[in-house]
Length: 353
Ligand code: SAH
Ligand code: SF4
Image (cartoon, rainbow, N blue to C red):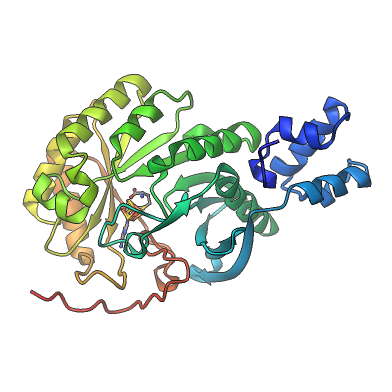
């Protein structure tokens, strides 16, 4: 057996632990864990000795450290310790009327170094396992169930770069889809633009959504904002998006965090439109007003500028939506997850120009 945690275990692992038990017992365990969101000790269809065996053999990976609530109870940020103790990570649960979205972390920290992102500012600790990624959704779903709300969407937009940890992420996608029953069309992987990862993803079977964090549509600016652009520049990134579209025939979304005076001008809108229009079907743009983080001096664009940028894109023929910001006052919004690092919000420091 290779698995060391409950949600890293395969059916085969469970069968080995419950040696000699008939197959229907394994099915009961599997359903209990993934559909009914139970811990082994709560799976009442199992004899008590089997529950105890499972519980002892396969511990959980995440220990809750704290829970913070914002937006009148509709956004919940959970800080966890991974079982190796040293690496805190965060998950955000967001309620929307009758369903919930969970934003999961895929790495403790991130090695990509985008300066405007709190996770990037904190640096990389380690990759997360499939079980650690899945467990975030299981535990968030238990919280949502108490409010009678079902988790319908999972976005891989928490701490870390999913496509730098593609195989563990894909293992999690499969468990969420096959075992938890979340439709692949309700799973979204967000990448900073790791080309080999996009290529691997294009050969994966399920039609998950792909979001590419662009933030700049010319190389000199993108090199500054997203340092990995020096390795995977825009033309090659666009080619990998085109190849992805040829294989998957699913629309790609470009994410664009609007930074005051940096990437919110008419010129930026034109350049972004040109990239979107070069894809078939044309890319959709998701605009995120930049959220404040401690290590980045420049502010997000004002509300007026965000709307003006959207109008410019739409006038050129590119569809754009403005992402409703959740959890900014508890540092749970995009780019603010730093897992226990001291985060000072409010007024960002002045740019030293
Ligand atoms: N590493 C992946 C996924 C995690 S980041 C990626 O970069 O896509 C999720 C999204 O939050 C990305 O689009 C990222 O660019 C954006 N983001 C990072 N810092 C932000 C900030 N301070 N304000 C708004 N969005 C931010
Ligand atoms: Fe990593 Fe994404 Fe943050 Fe960049 S924006 S540092 S890729 S988590």
